[in-house]
Length: 109
Image (cartoon, rainbow, N blue to C red; front, side, top):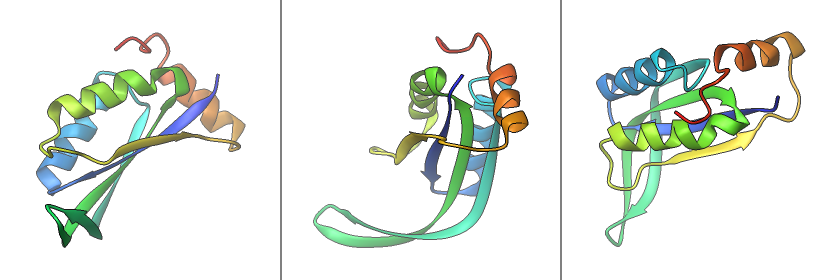
């Protein structure tokens, strides 16, 4: 079992909690960390924008990433949300196995 991180930014705390609780309760991910108040700079509508956002860091099995991204996208308020993932190369073996157990059988959403 290979595990992955999913990195998501959202506009407010309420949305962060909605997305985190939904994807954990549906077992699409094993856990989510919410990081309050990150400052984001980005291009949008031909201008550089900046705003306070909230960062979600979710952990899941790599085979479940597509289903988790699809679910996040369905409830995310942004037109073009930042939802990206990458595999976890190495880590605490017990923790990585726990991710696998908690998300077992949920690859298809």
